[in-house]
Image 1 (tube, each protein chain N blue to C red):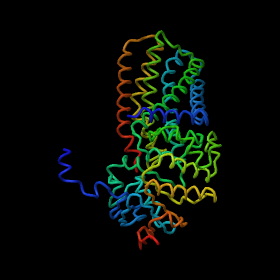
Image 2: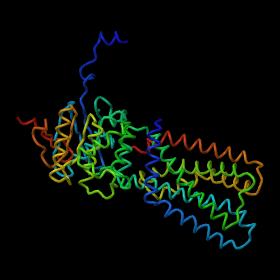
Image 3: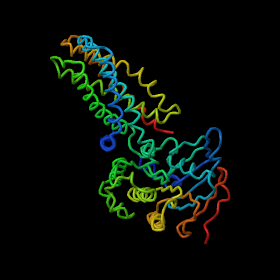
Image 4: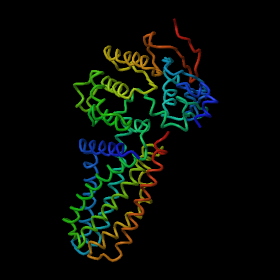
Length: 223
Length: 231
């Protein structure tokens, strides 16, 4: 695999995002609105808010990843860039890793902002093991990025286009969302018991998604 | 192994395969044939002008040769590499210039070319020279989103010059270009001839005759009446 290609793809995607801020300007308001709506709907019961916050946090991350996955390939498809990638002799697996890395960074930033909103709005504590919480976030976001970067391509290449993206992503990514939510809930409630199992599950899904993406990305890119 | 090769030399066709070899290539879109039963051989270093009306199948044929799309039926090779099985090898030796220039609007001209360098494992130092050669040296730090179609075409020419691929596929290269830029296309053709690159150019407009070895005409997706080079 060519690291130069992966790096070039990731830097290119991030540079484009920094310049046009399309993901931040659409995804962040969506996530913030969702959290605010739930916050007001659930009322002032702080215990309930804290219990439900991890789920809402990862739900916001999931919907953000669906939108981000689509946007990740929108610029490519519009300008013929996708064909440029197709017609280059570059390792398509490296292209996929570059795309996934760019998605990971963008989702991580979005997640950090969303987490800030949840901490302020819901009073969610970070718990006694912030390192493990950070690991949970990294593994969860990696899973969302790995799958979204693969299926986002399918959404712009396939006949069903964008409509297919949520249908494809949501069932496949459910194990990641469940594991990340459970791990986050345990850690924010101050308990690390059983955390290893959830983190292991996250790591296993990440590895599986990345391996599948590396192997099939080139085939999806072809005519 | 070396001794074996010495005793039974490979046939000439294997050592010098045609730049392009197509055998009864057909490409269907929703059941309609854009290209139908096209068989064609183009020698290495040859420059071919592919002419025909809109919808005659020129662009589709170029895209099949570039491996941007697969033939529905038939097959072929580029420099001896099978169109279906050795796409990566073909892509490394081919450049397709078309009206869709495949640049990113939010990147500058130089950033776009540097990105190409990364994909093709080329030295980034080629970028400035290529921009200068097409008259875009002063706008290398300007985002491509503000470029006219003509400037984009120039930038695509810069990319082609930078890469110097063995096979250059040009789809209506004169379109959207002013007189000055059209000279750049002719320079590209002349340079390709000097360097021994193979050129297939689909165009309504005739290129300068001395830069072309052979004319081919397409009509209704078929190759008709191949014309030998004029004296």
